[in-house]
Length: 249
Length: 249
DNA sequence: TTTGGTATTTTTGGATCCAATTTATGCTCG
DNA sequence: CGAGCATAAATTGGATCCAAAAATACCAAA
Image (cartoon, each protein chain N blue to C red):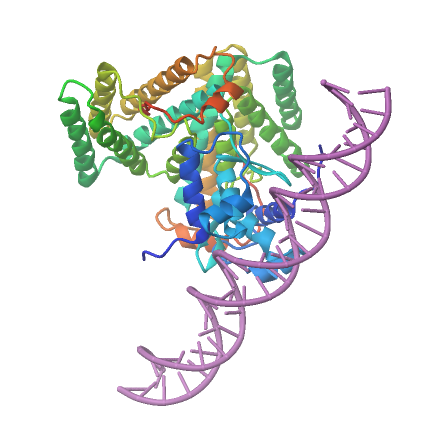
C-alpha cells in the first residue's frame, strides 16, 4: 500500500513546495538541466512534473522556452478567495443537507475546542500559530469532506496553489480578528448540527471573504502598492520570505 | 503568433477528444506503445499528454501500471452539476456587479436572438441541434468571461471533462423543456443588464441544476439503473455512442 | 552610441534505449 | 477443476542522445 513515490512525484512535490514557500521567484524560468541535476534525476521526470504543475496553475508553459513560475496579481488572489468563499459555502450547505456523522461531529467539536484553548490565553502567542493553523485547515477540510462533492474538494485545493494565498499563510497579529474568526467556526458548526444549510453557507461565505480582504489589504500595505498597480511589482517582491503569515479563514 | 502545436499538445487534444466522445471505454488502460505508434509519435510526448489529462481528471494514474480512462459514477456527474451551478451562478453575480460592456451586451443579445429564431419553428429540428448548442455554449462562456474571475472559467471548464456531462452533450427531444431553458437565457440577460446580481445568480443556478437533473434522469432511464447502483455499470456502458445528446443548460 | 546581422552557445522537445515492474502463460499439485 | 508457482513476455519509468529552436555574444555599419 505504501509504495515509494515515482521520481516524477518527488520532483513535483519539491517544486510545489519551493514555489509555494516563495523560494523560486515568480517569473523565473526553470532551468531543466540544472534543476534535474540538483534534484538528482534526469530531465524526463522533471519535465513531467513541470507539466503537471503547469496544469495545477503554479507554472506557465511556453513551447521551446519552457516553464516559468507563475506570477499572480492581487486581482488573481482576490478572485481565488471569491471562488473559495462560494465553494466552501456550497460545501457547508451540502454538509448540512447530508448531516454530520457522529464521528465527524465529534471531530469538528474537537477542533473548535482546541481553538478555544489556544485563544483562551487572551493573546496571540507565536508558538500557537502552527497548531491553530493546523486546526483551522482541518476544520475546513473536515467540512468539505462531508460535502460529498469531490469537485469542491479539488477546486478549493487548487485555489490554494497561490504562493500568497495558500493555507500555509496566516495573519496572526490581531487577537480580536482571530477571536471573531474562530467564533465563525462555532457558528458554522452550530448551523451544521442544526442542519441549517443556508446559515452555514452564509457564515462560511463571509468567513472566507473577510479572510481574503484581510490578506489583500496586508499585501497591499506591505508592498506599499496602489490598488491599481499590483501585478508585476507584487510578483517581483514575492521572492522575499513572508515574516508573517496570513490566515486563510 | 500562430505557432504549430507541440507533439504533446496534439496527443493531448486527440486523447481528450476520444475520451469525451466515448470511443475509448472508461476503465480501459492506455497502451503507450500502440497508442504512440497510432498517433505517429514517440512515447515521450504521449506520456506528458497523459500526465496532463490525468491532472484534468480524465485519466487515472497508477505507477507502473500506467493510465486508465477514468470511470464516472452518476453521483460524480451530479456533483459536477452541483459545482457548475454554484460557479456559473457566481459568474452571473460578478458579471452583474461589473456590468456588461456594450460589445458584450450586444453579443449576448445576438445569441439569445439566434436561439429565438431556432425555436421559432415551434419544434425541434435535428439540423438545429448543433447551432443551438453552439449558441448555448457561447452564451454561457460570454457570461463567465465577463465575470473577470479566471478561476471560475477554469473550474467550470473542468467540470466539462466528463464524457457524459460535457457541453457536447445535449438533450434535444422535448421542445417545451428547451423553450423554457431558453427563456432562462432571456431572464439571465435581463438581470445582467439590470445589474441585478442576485436574480441572475439564482436563475442561472436553477438553469444549470435542472439541466443536471435532466441528464441524470436520462442516463438512469437509458441504462435502466437503480439510483443506488450506477457506478461500474454506468462506466461500462458508456462505450456506446450516445444517440441523443443532453442539453447542458 | 545604436542598430542589425551573423555566429556560437544554450536550452528544449522528442526519439530511443535500458532496466525494473507488471501481466500473461504454462505447468504442477491437491 | 482450481490454486499456486515459475517463467516468459509485455509494459512502464527513467536515462541518454539528438536535432531544432531560442538565447547570447560578437562584429560591422550607420
